[in-house]
Length: 151
Image 1 (cartoon, rainbow, N blue to C red):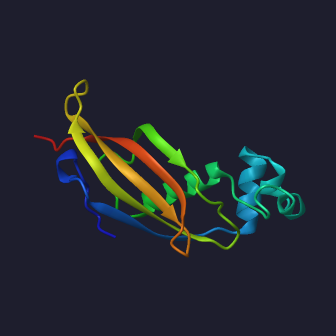
Image 2: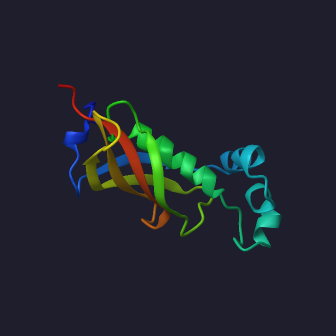
């Protein structure tokens, strides 16, 4: 993974940044759910089997947190860190299941200077998180605050 710090001027439409892989274990699904989204289909295999999900499924918020971990550990290295300003879109097209291996890809959709924050700008990314079969489990369009290169 490159150790290059990226400034606003370094981003161009179409660039892609990928992450490594992360395996999702049953206990991690249950621990996250117990702390943050304690619904039966995230906590109990029998209840999950009788639910819409027809089996244990990670919370969408767990998927979002795992995606953030993948991005931070991946090759997207904006100066100042990955600082989300706002989201345009967040979708979970399919459930994350125990044993799934996730990978994230961030594609630059736009980059522009900020009109109200001199020396900064916004980079819009489509971040797609996929399972080991290449199926999207989360799609987010996020706008990150990124500093311009120092003079």
